[in-house]
Structures are given as C-alpha cells and as structure tokens.
Length: 244
Image (cartoon, rainbow, N blue to C red):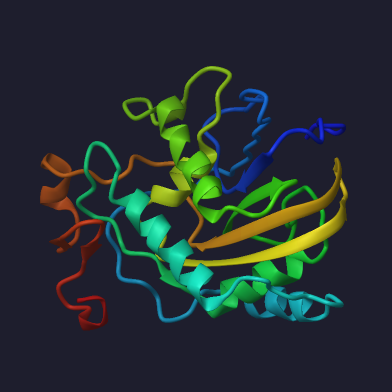
C-alpha cells in the first residue's frame, strides 16, 4: 500500500478477495488490488443466509457515526451498473447469477467506510470487498467503469492478470457465484493511508467473495453446469422463481 499519493489524482481503488498475482501501481491513477485464493465458479442457487455475518455486523453497529450517504436511487444504480458490466463479460457467461442489493452487506460497508481507513476490512472472511477513493464528487459510474476496465489486463485463458497489472476489481464484479452486493459512501475529512483531505470513500461488499477459478462460459462448460436459464446479463436457476 503506497502512502503520499498526489492529491491531484481523481481517484484510486482497492479490492479484497482474490488476486491471481501480486499487483503494482497501474498508472497515475494508482490502483491496487489484493485478493485471496478459493474454489470454483459454477451456477449455484443462493443460500438463504450468508454465514459468519452476525459478529461482523455487530462490530459495524458499534462504530460511532456509521452512516451511508447513498440514496435509494444510487443504490439501485449500483446494482444496475454491476449487472450491466456482468453482462459484458467476454466470452459470454452462461452460469452467472444476477446481483441483488443486500442490506446486511450495506450495513457492513457503512461501518467500515466510516472508519476512513485506506486498507481492507481485516474481519472479512467469505465476503469480497472493493474500495474506491476520490478527491472530487463521487461518481459511481466512473468508479465502476474503472473497475470493469481492468478486463483489458485480464488473461482469460490463464485466469490471471497481465504482468505488472491488476484485475481484481473486475474478477470480483463478474464472478458467477457472487449474487449479493451492498455498498456505502462516506465523506472523510482525512483518510488514513492517503495524504488527501475531503475524500469520497466508496466501499462495496460482495457475497460470496471471488474464488480463483475460471468464469463459467457458454459452450462446453455449460453442458455440465447446473441447470440454468441463460439470460442477459445473468442466468437463473429454473427452480428459483424469485429470480424469474
């Protein structure tokens, strides 16, 4: 993690989950990524409850002044943008679940965003995390576009980032099994880890976190994937009526 980043930069981002290889600064926008290794990415029915959240949410509730500045319209926009970019995966996905807003993940993000720390939440286990910080007014479209543009540095065949590049935000956004997202925004007067003032801090949490695996494709892989009704931008299990 680099300190003393020039305050003239518009924004930087950080992601938690899995990164196929160690990342270095991408360009003057100074992006970072860190991820952890895990299992596979086939179409699965969402569990009724995410495990190990209760104690994490309790900790978030104890943070003084934890507050989200995102409106309902902005929350809807975040879900819309995530699902839009998930639909842009190339090769096209055949076993990708649509993302839905999760109030529990939002609460988790609120508590951590209020701490104004430019580092990942150390208490997360099976929950992914993307961070974005900027010195200007928060632009949700710009933040998610920057995460998605990391696909230019992603080698699908090797399931890894290009040398000296990072793609962790992208892989978290489009991992097939991820089906819940919750984000929060906090305006930080000062940011621990960044030499900036008045920082717009965006935290997005994902469940489940990205696992180091090949993203599910149409074609041969779809033949042995669990039954899914392929749609754009995502697929829906036939027997899960709530997702029709």
